[in-house]
Image 1 (cartoon, rainbow, N blue to C red):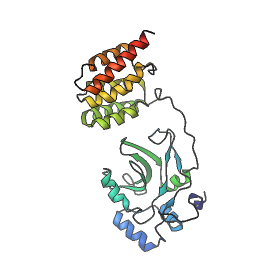
Image 2 (image 1 turned 180 degrees about the vertical axis):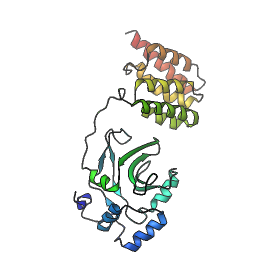
Image 3 (image 1 turned 135 degrees about the horizontal axis):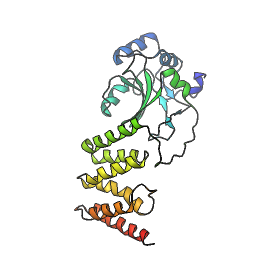
Image 4 (image 1 turned 90 degrees about the vertical axis):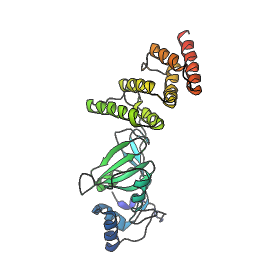
Length: 274
């Protein structure tokens, strides 16, 4: 691919000026990494830019799309905006590893050079809020070569994902962890992710959320179960289980939980009596 196809002809706000060996050496010392030669070579041609080919294909669904991640721009060698922004962005967004160098940011999503396992970094996508990490390419050159103009998003059945035994085991552990340590908002965001896995994992997390002590989590759960009550169930949750949960939560001291439970109970009875 001709790298000049990656950017528009006119310079933009991400352009950080011409790059020479001294600038590269100083930046590498400050970041304490050796930048990939392919990245340095690209930045010598255009030091930071909006990307024309804004999509990188992936087989892992994420908060951007089912089959791609979005790359709006690439940081140049510099700051405000530039590679040096990686230091404050890591701190601001709780990215603990100093061996992740952010090359593009759309918080809470980031494209990073990953130096954690080797000197020549791979390229990864991370979503801080979803606690998700996806490997995109073995190195920067492969990443640049994989960018495309457009990817049509594939429609997935959110209730029929095929997962490996290892992935399922990992999801169970993550559910237990977020229930034990997560805040209600974190639990709700992770539940949204679980809804794209499989029925067994969904049912497992539903029961965990049901047993949770804080009413806010019960309310988030009811937003899903109320859809089940209205018939958008697809066999995930049995009606007798819904009746049991709605009756239980209709006794809640929290008004929002109680009201939504009673409404959902009414809708379920209406559907069952039709």
